[in-house]
Amino acid sequence: MDSADVDRFEAGRARLASLAYRLLGSAADAEDAVQDTFLRWQAADRDRIEVPEAWLTKVVTNLCLDRLRSAQARHERAAGAWLPEPLLAGDPMLGPADTVEQRASVSLAVLTLMERLSPVERAAYVLREAFSYGHAEIARILDITESASQQHVHRARRRVAAERRGGGEVDPASARRVVEEFLAAAVSGRTERLVALLTDDVTAVSDGAGLARRLLRYTSRERVAVFVRAGFKPTPAKRRLAGGSPAFHIAPVNGSPAVLAVLDDRVVGAVVCEVGDGRVAFLCGIAAADRLARLNETWRRHAPDSPVIDTW
Image (cartoon, rainbow, N blue to C red; front, top):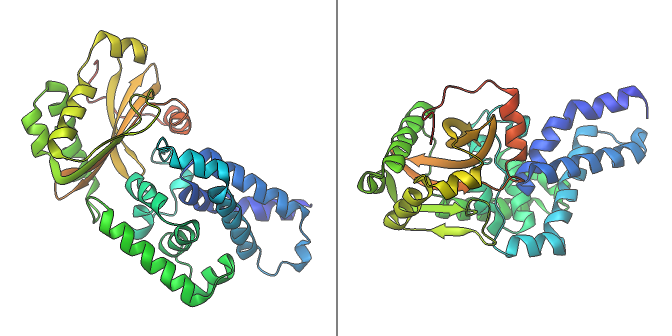
């Protein structure tokens, strides 16, 4: 393989990675899929490839579909312990992010909802919503008919819209103010204020400080408020688990404001909050170190804002 072929692949690597991340919900798995795509590009007869971008898109998409269909992936995801891997703003895997649909396709709520789609529905939805492929192109990538592509996208849109909390896009500054209020109420123990800051159909998902074998789920305002208050209440045991007394920052994660617990320049916990109509509609609490590995890499490369709370 000459340098021109390597350069051609590298020019599209970020796009392939962002596609694979949306399909798999895991940055680590997405990187593996892109590397496998490169190996196939390396071995291919490139003189017979008319449109390299289309060829590479088809290969990485089908590698991701193979992973989603594998027995191991089905077991892990069916076991009730799977969460999307959160990404800090500035991570190239979050792109493209020019349209509302592109930004929504990478939110933790939508990535979680896409678990309920079939692999082909998920691929058709991502290719259409996040990458603006036409149905003829999607049909060629997935080896289906155009009408099947239209049906898969329609069903996926309907299911995501029916189950998504919050809905439309929110001004980032307004969303941050809501989360600042939410954090202040959680830390101070004002449970009534917490309830008022949650939508009627709020959903919370957590990995139980990284210790739970199955995800914890809460679906009423009162239960979510109690769960949040318990999680943010400082105790000696929690400080020992965290390794000290972290500071709290607010930073964008997967397009939504997140409360990050930071200790010695390391994020030890994240609560991602999706906001709708001036209230929190979806929360995702993550503390398992392996789920925060890539977020931490990005965090260390960027100078963070001052903490909202200096010491917990």
